[in-house]
Length: 241
Ligand SMILES: Nc1ncnc2c1ncn2[C@@H]1O[C@H](COP(=O)(O)OP(=O)(O)O)[C@@H](O)[C@H]1O
Ligand SMILES: [Mg+2]
Image (cartoon, rainbow, N blue to C red):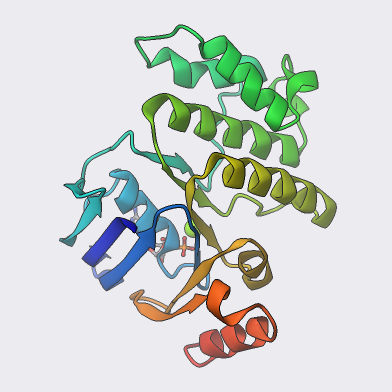
């Protein structure tokens, strides 16, 4: 079942054409990755989905509702840039997303639950400057997941969540994240420029052509398996560059 439809989305910044008649659909419960070179428009499409940017043309349909240009609580978003407030500790940064909600009961137990799931309990009182890169990402992820739980967002968008992490840290975080998201049955849109990362986590991978971004190809990993896939995707990308 399709949960999200991206229909004919185009977007330019002044003369720079970033997206051109982009079309794709995301199925309920899948891990859907967007892969493409830096600057091809991956963050731009997520910002459009999140309602932060308005497209020049086209539509975004989420569960049959037209959400084009609107910020919908039904979509959780972890942006590429860190969003933690430096003057708040981990707990208070997490608390922040629950403060926007009128019905604040049970939010502390929700925060605790996600601190536990993301191994953050021991860092509750730490400020962002005291955290390593991996734990900053963990806190940002916890924040996105708490927000998504409160607003009932079934689709979660993650923009390069593992970028700038060393290999071990990345591996640990990826294992935890995958476990949490699969257990919760969420639909994931995962953006990365790292092909092997996308292969290891995804059900389907869409390859964006360089600007203006259009769909080059969609790989369904459940149908084709992962063997030799990295080379195939690399070749696909290389043909473009
Ligand atoms: N708000 C903006 N104003 C002007 N140009 C932008 C803006 N946001 C992104 N761009 C440009 O659009 C292109 C695509 O950016 P982005 O979506 O961030 O790429 P990616 O996430 O794939 O690396 C880049 O050339 C970038 O400089
Ligand atoms: Mg980006």
